[in-house]
Image 1 (spheres, helix red, strand yellow):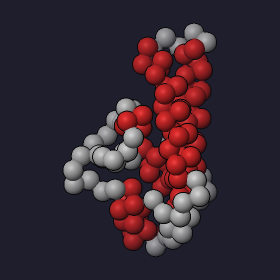
Image 2: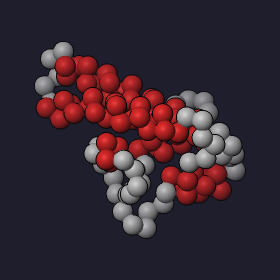
Image 3: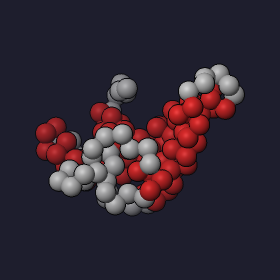
Image 4: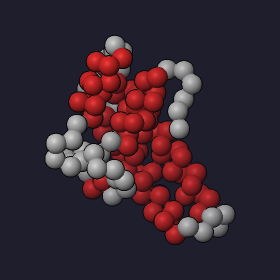
Length: 116
């Protein structure tokens, strides 16, 4: 999924999915990639590599990260809602409410911060 417009919105979404070893358990519980293994970039390092490659500023990177968390929480909430209403039967979707909460909590942790 990509957005049309500000490419930093896509960076924010990528950062949202990027788990780190020190992330809280509620966030790590729905990690699906190997980004938290030793030797992986941190979110900050990933963002810096992006900035180096593109020349874009990271001045507001926390905004974009929080936006990515919110955007992903909305998608997870919609999937959970469909499951809760019986519109889809995949039992994995029962846990999506925890993803919504974890994403919202992570966004709350970063509100007001200036750096990842």
